[in-house]
Image 1: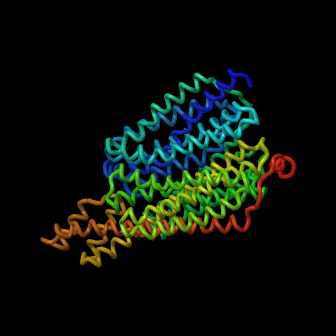
Image 2 (image 1 turned 90 degrees about the vertical axis):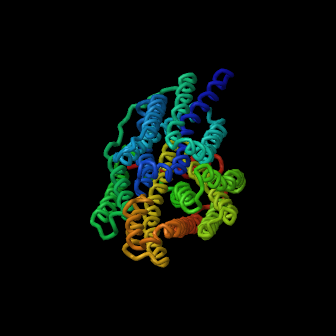
Image 3 (image 1 turned 30 degrees about the horizontal axis):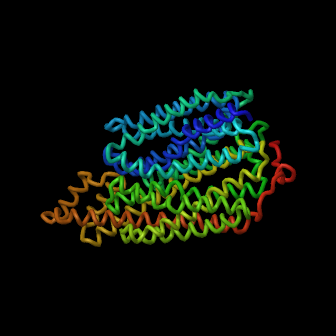
Length: 529
């Protein structure tokens, strides 16, 4: 490679890092502001969760479609389109009106943001791969994921301080980043090679419908109730459509996802571990942020520092995991990481009811170390298990698995959080002498995101008369502790997911390193029928 092309390759790499950085920062920055957004525009608790999950669900359902579209329409074109869509939707999220339609507005444009990310990310990845010769791709990809992934830790700090100014700025910050990405892309002018082909629209519709209905039923179960026909209809129909999707993909000559890649046992195990890990990894930022502000009474900027403790362990362990992968393979760091993470999440959750950061920080670091040991080795090992010609396809599948795991984790644990918090509130207020009717009204208000709703005030006043004002502080303390107890149980659930990941890795993950040329010669994945 000559000097000019080498320089251009670095410029291309920088452009693509700026493009995808928005999607990594977004994983953590929005969670910090949710309590503030909830209070300002009167979001329900499930509405707050949908602001996170609408984005994750859209990203997971459309990622493979975005990759296929980029191959056909051109990678550079899709990066530009994805960046513009992401930035415009970010600006519109920041411009959310304060009326009754605020919740629907935010969720709608967050879903479109996820679609923009799904179009942009696989195209950016393909451009980086194409810009470097095979001998230099490993280093280029390490820089790409290292810098972009490292920006995830920027979210807590940036989100905290921006929210102190206005929560709308956490969305507006994406606009200048997008402009820089577009300028660098124009300056670098990466190849826009196209490969004519067909898009599996039926597979795309089935994937979106199945994932969407399954997550809808699980997340809304706290509001609809498990006895409601809407809950079970959504879950059952969603699962049925996903089964249809799998059969359709296996039978198709031009599938959206080549699911036969899961016939490679090592790839399937890596994917299963990533799925279970992501049930905890991304949702933790939402739950921990809510806990810090509701139970600990911290400001948004203090919450950012609280979450940054996790990255102290995560960033260090990621380097350890990468070195262990290169030296001895993925099995040992993944098995060890799952065990450490499970212990860390359990102890972190167990300490939450003490309402003291000083009693939690070392458990938070342990949880971060565990996740850091698993994430990079499992993801890299999955790619190492397939031929180089399948990297794009394998990345599409692992990213779909990761984002869908996050979406399901948030839906299931978020629904349980609402149910447990309401139950804790009712019993906690009852124990403090608040009559059951008033306690039920207050719990219902909190469940729908209106901590100071008029009905709760009236119920408390009617029940306690002149003592209602004195009871206000008592109710606030009960609300803080009830939410802490519910969040504790959510973190126990995350620990359970990681225990399952531990046993999956321990029993099924092969040991040893993947040697150069081994996969291409012996483990190539069969083509779809």
